[in-house]
Amino acid sequence: MILEQTISPPSKAKHKVSRREDNKLQRHDRAAHQWYRFVLSFPPHLVRDYIKKFELNESHRVLDPFCGTGTTLVECQKLGIQAVGLESNPVVCFASRTKLNWQIDPDELWKHAQRIAALVDAKLEEFGLENSRELMLLETSQNHRLKDLHKLPADLAKLILKDSISPLPLHRTLVLLETLEENRDDRFYDHERLALATALVNEISNLHFGPEVGVGPAKFDEPVVSLWLDHVRVIADDLKNLQAFQQTATVHQTDAREASSILKPRSIDAVITSPPYPNEKDYTRTTRLESVLLGFIKSKEDLRALKRNLVRSNTRGVYQADRDDLLVKGHSEIERIAAEIEQRRIDLGKTSGFERLYARVTKLYFGGMKQHLADLRGVLRPGAKLAYVVGDQASYLRVMIRTGELLADIATSLGYEVIGIDLFRTRLATATREQLREEVVLLRWPK
Image 1 (tube, rainbow, N blue to C red):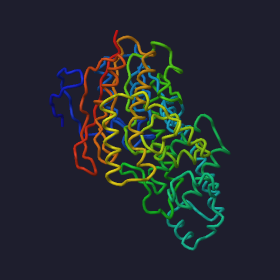
Image 2 (spheres, one colour):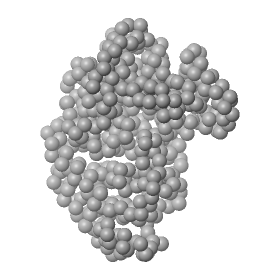
Image 3 (cartoon, rainbow, N blue to C red):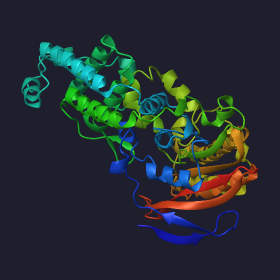
Image 4 (cartoon, rainbow, N blue to C red):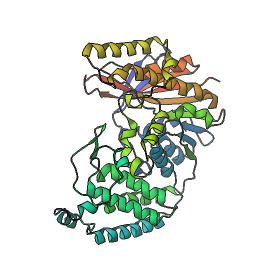
């Protein structure tokens, strides 16, 4: 359903915006996208809309500076458009790169995965755990050899959410990872591990997303190998239809606030992206289990290094040395919102360390986005068009933050032209039941 209405953007010009209810991955879009995807990833059809609106073709180069699981990049590659992504989270960067690699033999991938599965089953059978749900429950109901199960080292176990995976599924997963490493084939290694990451999040673990990541009821056991094979089969089937496409997209693991350190001056024709929203969602928690099990985070130091390379959008990623808030000092509306948050905290008697940071993280977020937009100017070609998918937030003690309007105002102060703010969809705030807007802020870098 499309609803048409008129609103006034910061530039005061009148323009139409559309509302879309469907944020789900549609059946015809699943190829490559379904290999690994965040619950709230923006949909491929939205990317196509702005590729069409910006009149992009094979002669252009698109940037996604917050590329996440690669939605923009995959769509560009399917259309033969050059694209580059920036992503700080190593496991997500790995996922995006793998989702763009379509030049491997799907039949050989499937054969190799089946051979790995047979080796893992043999190991589990020798241990006393056949890969059959009925036999698994029969054996483990008597706590058969539970003390001998493979486990994570204590320091790594502390990095994942408590009880996010049960002992038996963890044992099976670690045996599978061990076997993949022992029989590594570099042609298929990344795709096989990505299939496991997806199976971990969706079926093997106790995690649930609603939309925040949490831990649900413990699963006593899960058929890890067969679940993994299901996802390898999905990848192999998709590859049969994707191999005709050429590689046109690349991903760099870097901070979105430092795009100019990676990209050549005046090399980007368009930006289509969705940065983090200013809320209490710790994006590193969403990917913590697969990050640790696949070896992308091996210590607290790794986790801290990752968080320091992110735009500050939640209090769990704030550090004493952060200075991005200084970049929006004197911005009247951001200062007003921060002051209202702090006053409400005082009035409500909220005294936890995280609650004391609510006002500051709000300023850090918009300061970080300003740093990103300022740095980006040097890599944009004259006339480049930009689309930023952002959402209103009321996470900080129910104080409304109109993210799109503020981002547009910051962009204007940096010399960008605001050409529109499209309404993508609306959603209800959990606490207040107030309508929150998700919008696409449209900018142009002047010629």
